[in-house]
Length: 501
Ligand SMILES: *[C@@H]1O[C@H](CO)[C@@H](O)[C@H](O)[C@H]1NC(C)=O
Ligand SMILES: *[C@@H]1O[C@H](CO)[C@@H](O)[C@H](O)[C@H]1NC(C)=O
Ligand SMILES: *[C@@H]1O[C@H](CO)[C@@H](O)[C@H](O)[C@H]1NC(C)=O
Image 1 (cartoon, rainbow, N blue to C red):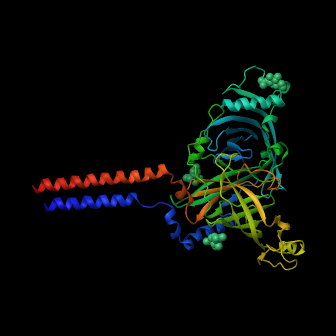
Image 2: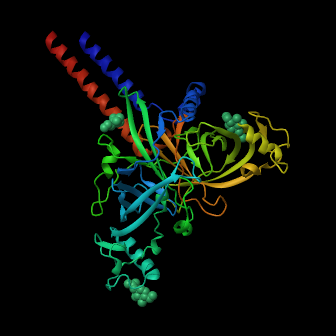
Image 3: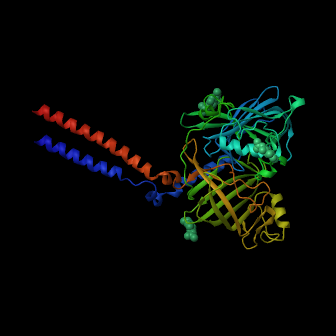
């Protein structure tokens, strides 16, 4: 009797606990409990690491020999979704694979190009600090099409600029068949039908190689890897074939056997395109604090960014500009405040969300004496002429911004954003690539800059990914665990009961 009621009490308490566990609030309700002061230091610590580019060294001149792969499904202006697998050989020849996809997760291959040629490295670039110039020569380009719809579009495009190229009367391109697009190796029969695809390899005109080393707390060891930066692609597709790069694309990573992401692309080729695993799609929610993941290149300067979203349609941004690719020598910094709209799903770029951003207030701080002189000479706008001092911030809202650094106020621009979970589990926020020609109003953005990493405030991934199904799944697991425990208690109880009698 005694034992029986004990068992009953245990069972009932378990049921109550189980009920409580399944009802634990996720995300939203925790919002108000964030202790900002605690987490703020993470943003600061990351900024300090980036200044001076801790753990990063440039390899000059670059030694690109080896296999290099994309670090994620890259979004190029257009948009184009692409994975790259580039191989450079010791005799200065290269063979490069570009795999294009119809979706932003790189799961549905459309076509691929294989590009062969040679590259010769030259001097340090005058245009992009830290880059080495290069001259390249493409000798052969072949194409394989995987997607029928894409094949049809491409065929009519190519027929327009290169009539007669596809001689067979079939309506579609043969899938998984190799087509020669450029062939300078056989001089007598060369063809060049790349115009329809806006094909250009000018990215090979600048090269930068970096060695990264970082202490991994998980395995308590230093880990290292290498990155290869090639030239950027003009954000206006029509300009692509004529543009000389002035910045970089996202870096490629040197293949290492212990890099699991690299394995997905390693050894893939034109008849076996890489397919990335499905990744959770996150809705962009503008909240929390975000900081650069690297010292970023911006035309003539380099920048570290820190953005803060207040969850009430206002935002703040800190931008620290440097003149060197290690972010060691500061030029000036700006602090801006403004508002933003609600997001709407982009119809042009799958996975992207569009916003309107307004910058209404701005402060500028000159960080070296040349800049002080420059600011003081300017008497059109940019605060009171002659009043600038080294390291002293000045508000330039009243004078309508600062044309010396190219910002007039108030200033509205359309943003394109996307969120994903980084490989370290932290949320990453991508925002629009700056237009190559500098005019933010001309083009709709279709590609992204280097991502910012979540560094303080509520983790937006936890909050918004909890879709209905996920919730069910989580409480389902909790309930299952509880039922298992409950059964165990019942068994124990019966055992004790049987022993007693
Ligand atoms: C290519 O274009 C020509 C006219 O410009 C047209 O007659 C022909 O049918 C087209 N061929 C294909 C395969 O689309
Ligand atoms: C992978 O292996 C290389 C040496 O082959 C090593 O330098 C690097 O730190 C390793 N990376 C990780 C993440 O273990
Ligand atoms: C938005 O939130 C921030 C931080 O909580 C606050 O400083 C600011 O005044 C708020 N702005 C508006 C318009 O409510």
